[in-house]
Structures are given as C-alpha cells and as structure tokens.
Length: 148
Image (tube, rainbow, N blue to C red; front, side):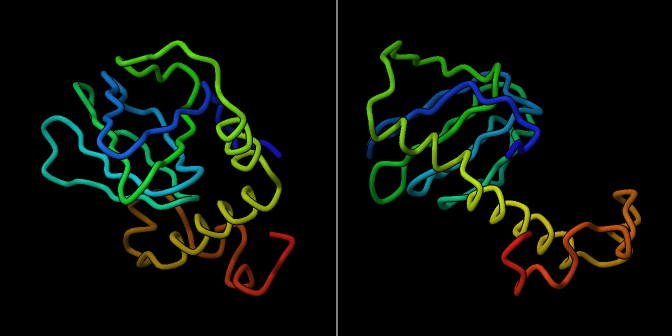
C-alpha cells in the first residue's frame, strides 16, 4: 500500500542522541517505533509523537529529533537527510521497523488517524482548508471499520 510518500529510509535514535535535520520544510517524518520530541528553529511549539504518528516540518533551518523514554525508529521522507548521517547499513531491527511502517495494518491505522483528525475539525476550519465534511474520505464509520 502506498501512502503517497517516498521514503529515504529508517534511522534509530537512542536515548541521549539527537537527529539533526536542516532545511526540512515540507518534508515528512514518521515514527515507526517508540516516541520522539521534535523542535524546529524559530518555532516555539514542540511536537511529541508516538509510534504510528507522522510529522510535516513547517520551517527551514535546523530541526532536532530526540528519542523519549527509550530508542525510537523513524522513517524519513525521500530527500530528507540527517546532518549527522552515520552511513551505516540498517540493522535487522531497523529493517523490521521499515517493514512495519509500510505494512497494510500501519497504512490502515494512518488513514483512520487522518480521517479522525479531519472529522474533529470545525466546519469553519475545514472550509479554510478547502475541504467539506461530506467529502472527507473514511468518514465516521472508520472507528468500527477494519478495511479502512
């Protein structure tokens, strides 16, 4: 199943390590395993993501991703290259995390999460985004539906 993203690969971030990304605006990162904290240069807001969540970087400059609580594995969109690239080949746990991030259950969960997020927005905000509630795919039935 295709999410519409082209993936660069996986990176494991151990506690105490930082993944440094420069000029990542418009690019995506998905947490395949664990939890991460993300901060972007010039943005007072920070993001905390758990396994299965995705993040779209909004700013260029330096962005930092740090594991929370334990090791975290992230999947980077194609073209998003860390400054502190180690150049090593992914180990078996990273390969498993990549396979999980591309699995059918993961894709279904991502679609459900997107639909639930859109469904929670006000009609006014949906209009501002150019969307209509009756045109949002995977409507209210997604909570019970295993095929979406």
